[in-house]
Image (cartoon, rainbow, N blue to C red; front, side, top):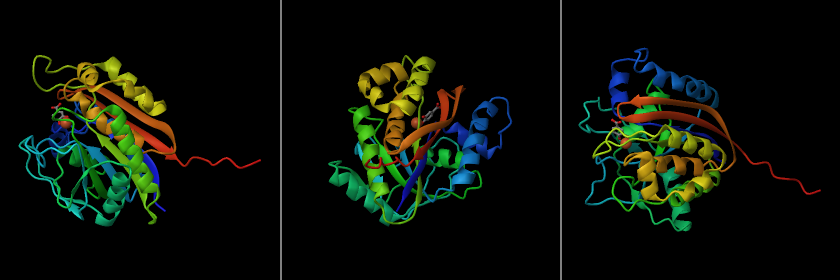
Length: 285
Ligand code: DHB
Ligand code: FE
């Protein structure tokens, strides 16, 4: 059976791609951010995931305002990246596994998630940057991309994204193949790229979100989307991807590592690593 080994939440700012291309790992601006991945690299080397379910939002490369699914799941054997106009190198394609994707899609629809299924899907910086950060050698595990609308309102609620993750988690653990699966949620934390509050960052709220995500994610569902926009910024709503990631960790969760650094570009940059241990069944007395 497939096993969920853990999850990572991380920022996906495009300029990280440029810094990687220019090998700026030890540059004073970048070091506090890149060094946050040392612990993740150690964990990945030990845990060796075969597959990753990636919750992220598309930024107009694949979907645009004319047609924007609330939830879309890739069902392809390959996901290409294209030039997004940020001046970062186009990355190589990510491998997929259509059979594994269809299993997850079946589970989601059975759980009443009316998702869009995509037998062709491009992936943007929200997928490629975190993969490059975690596997600098380019040797990525296969992915199942799940795209959540964080762009055009109305957005799905915090509770709905947590439930989406839980449904994905249940589907993974019922997959008969022996895959070691990790979950990735990208974007955030607080940031706003445009308007009067451009540059907005909220360290207190980010800290609260990371604290509660680890121990009591349900508590975060008290925030409405307008409250999330106010507290995290118009693009800070990308935290919805982190909620889905946390929902998919269906076992006992331990936070192994956290890094928080202000700013990377316009964003409060954060990385968290969760371990997911199978829940122990209590024996009858
Ligand atoms: C930035 C952050 C994002 O999440 C994004 O998708 C693009 C740019 C930024 O801070 O520059
Ligand atoms: Fe983004």
